[in-house]
Amino acid sequence: MKIMTSVYESLLSDYPDKGVIGKPEIRDTEAEIIDKLRTLTAHFRNAKTTGKPIFVLIGAGVSTGSKLPDFRGKKGVWTLQAEGKQAEGVDFQVARPGVSHKSILALHKAGYIKTIITQNVDGLDRKVGIPVEDLVEIVMSVGLNPTGRNCEGNSKTGRPCRGKLRDATLDWDTEISETHLDKIKKAWKQTSHLLCVGTSLEIIPMGSLPLDAKTRGIKTTTINYQETAHEKRVETAIHADVKLVLYSLCNALGVEVDLGDDLPDDVPVPLKI
Image 1 (cartoon, rainbow, N blue to C red):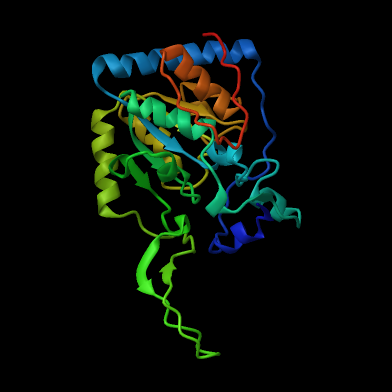
Image 2 (cartoon, one colour; image 1 turned 90 degrees about the horizontal axis):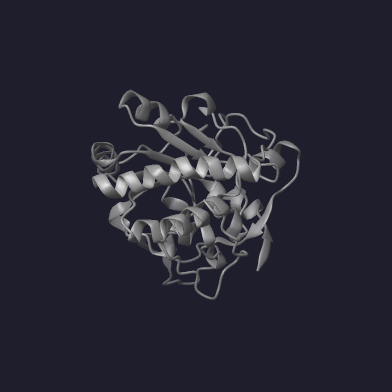
């Protein structure tokens, strides 16, 4: 079911500090992607050998394969909003995890990654099966989670309603819970590398993770078509399709990805590393 994502936008509280939107996309050549993937693959192998799993931050770019728009891409919600247009996408409730989500899950199951911070509002991280205990959900409310209250009825018509209420507003200024902060602190102590996927790193505080990593002597890899806010401060910036990179990474590591039979996107041919 396809809808205009004005519904998407209506779920977001006003957030004036959107950072830079509409940056030009960069497309690495196949040779460049393979070379950068070799470096990333080495980090993943080292993580498995040392028992220090990769720390992962994911953004809206991970869900574009699920027919959901990002925010700052050329067809992103905020980019088109600035042009007086609306982005298109499917309803959250019918959106399905794509190749990128399933590749991340496979890498998690294989022990290469553990703690995953998600900035996404679509609930696909949980839907794909990533364990809640390893998820740090910076924005939880637009996952349409139950509030614990029941509908009190329509005050105008007087009609009763026994439906369960779900929270459908994303408040950008909501503070990160102590539980999540504890997970992040623990992840820093356990990790050997930071991987930021499908995010421009424009929104603080999560956008500053590569800087935090650098102060700890931990290197960072980013996967994003556009330049990130910390392009010059990371070890490797991969400018390519997220699902191609993640699926190729799984293939290089010998990790099988359970794709199922209900994918919203096409399966890429993995690059040979």
